[in-house]
Image 1: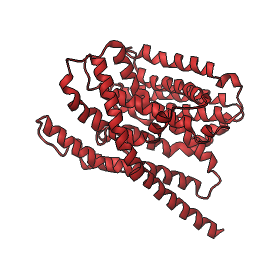
Image 2: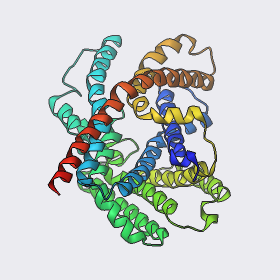
Image 3: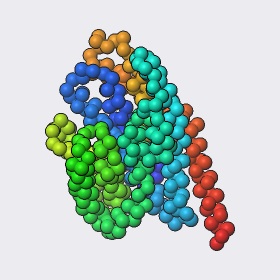
Image 4: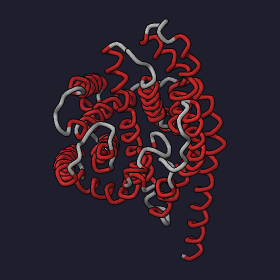
Amino acid sequence: MSSNENKLGYVDAMRGIAILMVILVHTSQRVPNLSPLMGRLAEYSQMGVQLFFVVSAYTLCLSFERRSKEPYSISSFYIRRLFRIAPLYYIAIPIYFAFHIVKQHYNSEPISTTEPYSIVNIVANILFIHGFVPSANNNIVPGGWSIGTEMAFYLCFPLLFVISKKIAGNRPIQLFALLLFCLGANLALQLIIIRVTNNSFQNGNFFYFNIINQLPVFLVGIIAYSLHSQKIHPIILSRLVSIFGFLIFFAIPLLLWKSKMQLLFAVIPTISAISYLFLMNWIKATKRQSGLLCKIGVVSFSMYIFHFLFAWGLVPTIIGGISGIVNPDIMLLLAFLLTCALTFCVALITQQSIEAKGISTGAKIISHLQERAKRLL
């Protein structure tokens, strides 16, 4: 096994790709009149969140398997997850409250401190249950829906991991049957929900964001772990098969994106996730990953949290003067590069000053629990 694999460089590269996709879609939302091709690619880049989900499930499997024999392994799992996410997210809440006020003032709108920043919505985000509260789901911290969905996945992950291992056995390909079952169950549940509630299922609404709709995406990450951890015929994981597999499952959502099919976006996230399974195989088989891409991946959580300040705030203000002069596609490229650069600089600081300290605090709590367990033996 190469040193790169030991360091999970391919995982950092995947995270780097994911955050660049997310920044692209949000940057494009402030650049009108894009060409059809650029507009479609920019819209599709919202699937960067699904790439994050796939990588998250994959790395959770690696970590959970490695630490399964430790004392208090389940408690330690939840402590690690909480202290990995909470410190930065909690700091983001007042920052985006201030951003909300400044934006209202800049747009000469009446300043309201009750919507969406009500006590109920803020508390739901603090408790990480906003994935189940429509009014709090994606309003307190932009993009916060993915954190709520991820936290909901953490809650059921240990059980899901055990079930998937039993199903996979020595044939991880059997997990695809579980994936199809979950996808079918999701479609059925979403159809029942929209019929009962008389609401519609649309890209970017509460039903789309919910863990029920995103669970098959996480399952693809578990499948990737199972394929990589067991002896699979080399041709399945070969670079050539991975390239073709990625291109096929990447093209399908692009072709379907503007379709009027009901519940289309209950299927597209999973199709995209399967393309990322092939992408992961491809990148993992590459001996060397881009150093810059891996560095971006390391600070990708901080970049995810703070890039909205630049993509929706500072950068449109900076380049607004050339709007109408420069081609919109070039405008998007400039806005994207500037947003990435500014966000990366901030993330280098917050990753060390907030994320790393939160992770360290969680590790200390876990160490204390494990020491106590040893003394009781």
